[in-house]
Every structure is written in structure tokens, then in C-alpha cells.
Amino acid sequence: MNTMNFEIAPKSTEKEYTWYDARLYCFALNIDGKTGWRLPNKDELNKIYESDNDFENNWYWSSTEYSSTEYDGIFVWYQNMSDGVQYYRTKNGSYYVIAIRSIT
Image (cartoon, rainbow, N blue to C red; front, side):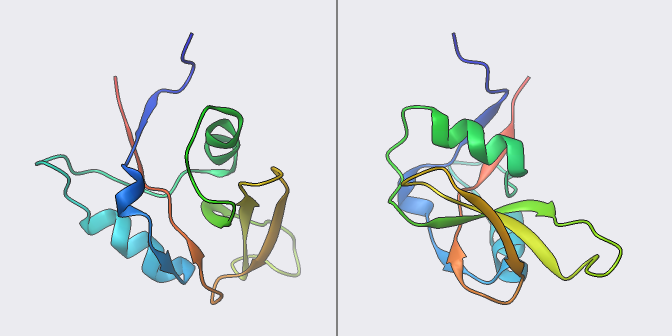
């Protein structure tokens, strides 16, 4: 049973960007007339990792910002698709993008 309520963009759309540019890339993405693409949140990204996916063994951005009183707005979560490790870092590094869009 598929518990994901989102569609994953094809692997061919995978690009490497800073977090800011990754968000813009998803927003502008149009695949066969389908729009509304976005970065997955931290939990959605982990669901993709746990599913049968064919994404490279790289680090991928999530949309979830790391929250702490000292670092609000500076860090964001990302995940390694080879081992499932999630960690946070500044938004100006370059990592890969998995675009998703909600389905009903």
C-alpha cells in the first residue's frame, strides 16, 4: 500500500542547488503541464528514502527549517539517500533536489 500522498518528479529533474535556488526551481517546474512542485518536508523526504526509489546516493534538501532559539532561519534539514541519515546545515550549501507535488 502506498502511503505517500504526493507524486515524485522524475529522476531526470534532479538538480543540484542551494536551498534557496532549489525552492525556486521546484516552484517553476512544469512537467507535462503539471505544476505545484515543491521541496518535500523532512518526513516526506524520509518516506521517499524508505520507498523503492532510484535516486542517487547523495544528500537532498528538505523544506523543513531547523528550529532553535539561536539558529532559527539559518539551518534546514537534509537527508542522505544512501543511509537515511538526516542532518541540518546552512541554506547556502549545494545539495540535490527531489521535487514533489501533492495529490488528492
